[in-house]
Amino acid sequence: MPTTAPASTLRVALVGNPNTGKSTLFSALAGVRQRVGNYPGVTIEKKTGLLRNGDLTLELIDLPGTYSLAPHSPDDLVVVEVLLGRLADQPAPDAVLSIVDASNLERNLFLLSQVLSLELPTIVALNMVDLAQKREIDIDVPMLAQRLGVPVVAVQANRHIGLRQLKKELAAKVRESSQPGQRKLERENVRDNPFP
Image (spheres, rainbow, N blue to C red):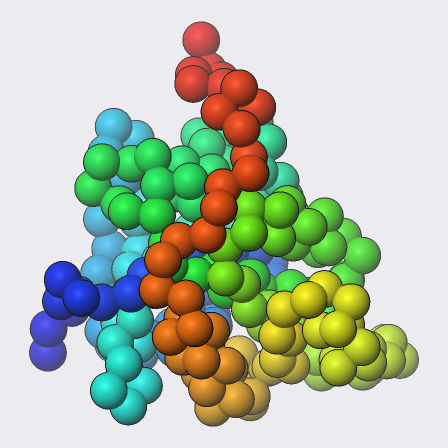
């Protein structure tokens, strides 16, 4: 089973805070079609996988968990570099799948706001909705999508709930725009080497 993406494959970066179920969702979407390596020059794991949805093949990039696009660690810097298309072997993603923990929404919205400021086509996977319900947190998903201005899909990655709808929304968003969006995060806001 091939794990390398054809040249015409569109790339989707998975972004989220640590412990949001991002890697669980990545595995649920990519299945066994995954590759693991390192980013050039660092020992940070690079995980990619393929998602086939009808006639569309997407290369999924599972980025390290981060709380912010202001890099404070090598992992954070890799996330920023990938999103901005600054790595030689990694073109900018065609879209972003932002994974948000429904049971801790406020903490997750900071990173999401930074991702949205990049103006890349974005979809939000509202994960862990079961935990939010257990904590009696009620989220109006259509209202959240309206306020954010991007599609929001409620999922339970560990149980594969909501994945069909997520794949449908992701395919529609990627087809809608096959060109990377306008980058607003200015070069001077991201230090070239934050680790002297």
